[in-house]
Image (cartoon, rainbow, N blue to C red; front, side, top):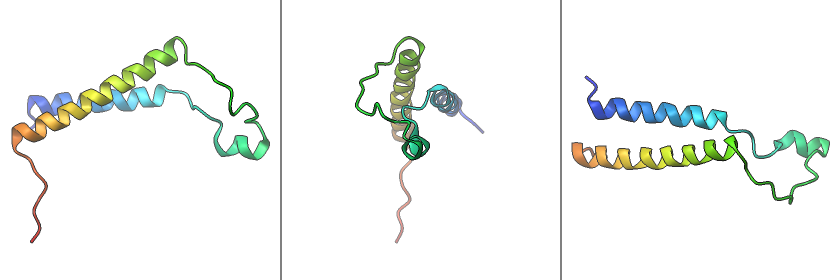
Length: 84
């Protein structure tokens, strides 16, 4: 049976996945290298508006995910199995 912290952990995980999918690609990838589309490689482009908000939300939820994982692990006494 799922406990309350398991449900919060799952919700935070889903939010991180959704926010990651909302982020646009930072580069053109291999197709840009083949076609020569990435000519402004060293151009500094700042994130603005909603892109910046999504980036900060993703970072915040990732930190929350890390702390939840540590807190749940410590509070439940979960540890890596010891192999002999």
